[in-house]
Image 1 (spheres, rainbow, N blue to C red):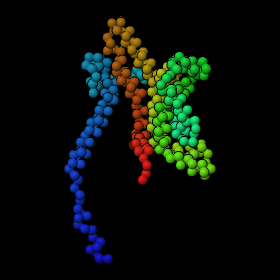
Image 2: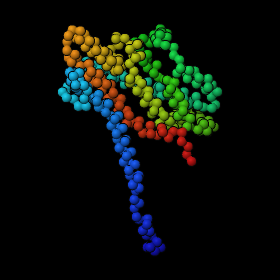
Image 3: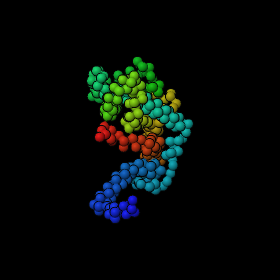
Image 4: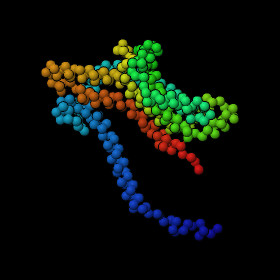
Length: 309
């Protein structure tokens, strides 16, 4: 074979110049994406900056993007009892991990069962699940159920169980599992696999984007839980969930500020506004670190339901 045949034609070696319109479109898209990202980060930065601001400056001059008089007084008040806040962190982390793992298992199993065409009762059960999104029994029956019948007063299960499953997450998981062909289940049954084995070994690995999405919603729900903890966990419980612990701190600060106002004490001596910002930072900081780990699964979740050609 001659050397001329091995040489590529000159036209193939020339670089293709990009279309100017594509360059402009990319630049405009990048500009708008950066602007949107900046607008998303700006509120959180505003919270962080004002958590280090003095109460007097916030009252007189308003909120700022950079602390005028840097202070950590609000954080000192929050961490005044470090053993209590560390215990609250540990209690919240345990509730979040345990609740998310169990909730993922229950929600994924329920969603998978409700979309199987060979499950005859799926429509009836789906109706009862969807019905709860329209009507609720109310607070009093719920409180009596948890305290009188289930005997879960002053028990962490009263915080764990109500958020374990929700109709909306079941609907979401059901829609995700529709992308799994039923022929896979039938093939596994022919090979002798049982329903639980099919679910654990075949279905769950195919639902990683769905599990990441639902798991994040469950984790956020448990991390931000304070209402059920307020209802069912009395002050006798030393380590209560973090959100309730911070809520009590802000409530006490608000009470002190109102009492000081009636006693003609300057309001800037009670750092209520800066403490609200500091509690938001303390509560948001750890859970926000979860997002980078599940971001790629959200991107994969966009393509759920696509069919290979």
